[in-house]
Image: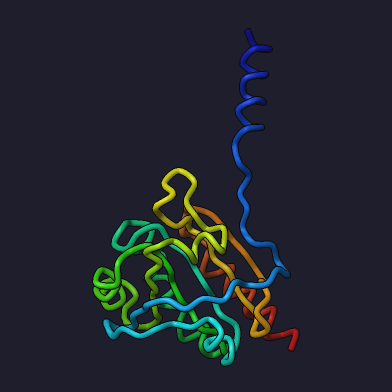
Length: 177
């Protein structure tokens, strides 16, 4: 019986797809997307943002859910420190822009932009689709260098640590300049 269970567990493990975040050193896919900051809509361009310094790109499943609200508050509190290091923060989800207009004011506290990826093209390009619910983004954070290379990646549904780890990656980048 134990052998059967063990073989079944191994077989199940072998057919489950592995997480496939973009690797450190990979080229970051360029994108533009409808975005909002403090309820004011604009088009976010990764290429334009990278001209000012590194970009902290974080994907989250859905606005106004518990974990996403916690993460938005954490990034809002850290935005000034990211800016002091020359970094731009942008959150991305599949939410529509009307929802994100509210979320950007109430939960992001008008501190950083959030972008709408309704067709899931950005989350697909960044391998940040939530496997269990492919219509949502996984909670994956990237730090992208001004040269368009992935410097850091962290993926975990628990929002704890995303801000601290991306901040450490930005500080490491800053120290290496």
